[in-house]
Length: 204
Image 1 (spheres, rainbow, N blue to C red):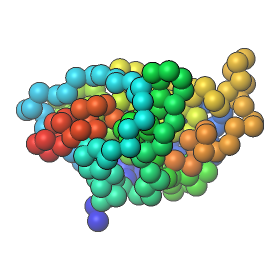
Image 2 (image 1 turned 180 degrees about the vertical axis):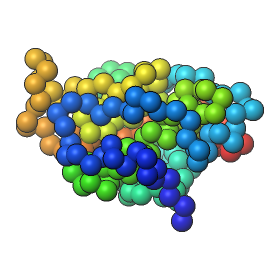
Image 3 (image 1 turned 120 degrees about the horizontal axis):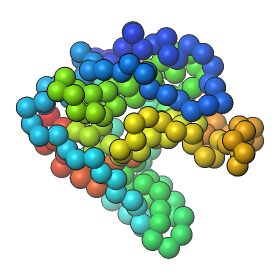
Image 4 (image 1 turned 90 degrees about the horizontal axis):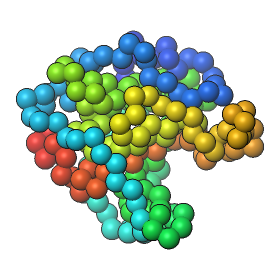
């Protein structure tokens, strides 16, 4: 089984989880074993974010394909995709539309933290043509939540994930590790990604 752990990035994960948000390496450039590099001659998918509005448990082919890709290529365990989680009229979690994958890795485990850092960096690294967030765009990934940190399509880097912090910015010591996304990575997909219509699933 091929694994995409990047030794040069493993040092990012040696420390215990910090109160501040996870950050990408400041010098993150193209990575040699990034699958997105094989697709540089194909026009890259646009940067987009599709909000969720309702509960729809129907399995989505792109979500199934992304889960299988994770299971074949990286460390971790699938923790599910569908959960009818509504926030109000016309507003819901991406899990509610079955457009999100929870992938178990523990931020308190040194090795698992390294695997998470490597995976996220690969998804958000530029390809050899300089396209930012190349693999995430090819797959249709529009958001990532990990270790009290949030990234959404179009963002340069992660920001603080609000449930982990008080209004004055101090860490919320009462938040549990699942809400904080310290025991799993949340990956949210666009409608095109979930449907398997982005370039990685069509021609990758």
